[in-house]
Amino acid sequence: ARAIWHQVTTSEFPEFAKASVLMRDRSKVETTIQAMQRAGPEALQVISDFDMTLSRFAHNGKRCPTTHNILDNDLLINDTCKKRIRELLNTYYPIEIDAARTIEDKRPHMVEWWTTVHDLLIQQKVRKDMLAQAVEESSAMLREGYKVFFDRLQENQVPLLIFSAGVGDILEEVMRQNHVFHPNIHVVSNYMDFNQCGELQAFKGQLIHTFNKREGALLHAARLGKLRERPNILLLGDSLGDLSMADGVAKPQHTLTIGFLNDQVDERKESYVNSFDIVLVKDETMDIPNDILNYVT
Ligand code: TMP
Ligand code: MG
Image (cartoon, rainbow, N blue to C red; front, side):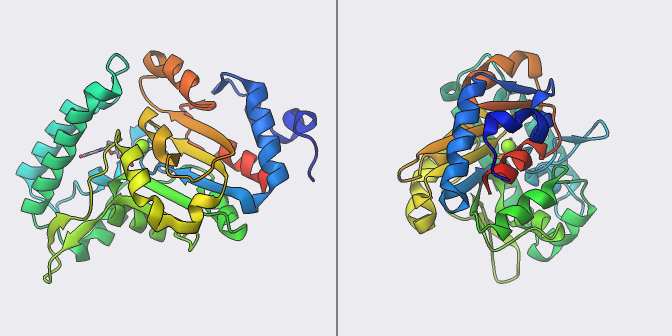
């Protein structure tokens, strides 16, 4: 049923009334969704971050791993390396999410974090044939409602561009094991480069970290071809850096951005509400994106 948005908000979108859903300008959100609905699924593309956006931040009060943290497994790296990688996380993650620092100020620290971790992983000669088992043994989970989300996009032939500063090989495996790595998915991420013996020897292409997604988006725009031409964008992220993931789209018409605010809620609420159209506070589900897609497709 394609009813008018304002007539159905309360009945078809009960989730919007939840206290965890914040909107700076609700009427703008509604007009954008209406416009997307009128243009239909053929005009739509979804651009999403992976870690802590498609994957869960926490489950039953316990943190879930990022794709990098899935590599923290005896199968792949030794104890000294594990310790070092955890120290780096404790040093740099607080910088990544610090509400008091600017993105410009954070950028060099992120480059340092990623390059140090990647060098450590290369030294460990991480083995390609062990990655699937490491993913199986990890506590990584996609957000509740993920299956409906991925399947609906595939069924409606809406392209999903996953733009991740995580590890491409790992996020593909997470989706494969959850049976949602469909043909409509395109991934831009940090991919591992293995030697003939199947040992990690480098990372391919230009490094992607949390705060250089704009460069990545522009760099990969040509490769993504037709995808760039879809004018309506649903963007999902959990970092302010994710907002530039759509910068490679040729002629954007209607863009709706959804930000998952997982951590440091009080400190970051204001900047998130000012930057994303919809902010979901400590919401481990895909309910809101699914409601919107249900309406638009
Ligand atoms: P993404 O959300 O763009 O996919 O970015 C990857 C996330 O991974 C980012 O929020 C920081 C995190 N990360 C780790 O958890 N461990 C690491 O060693 C590194 C380099 C990043
Ligand atoms: Mg993320």
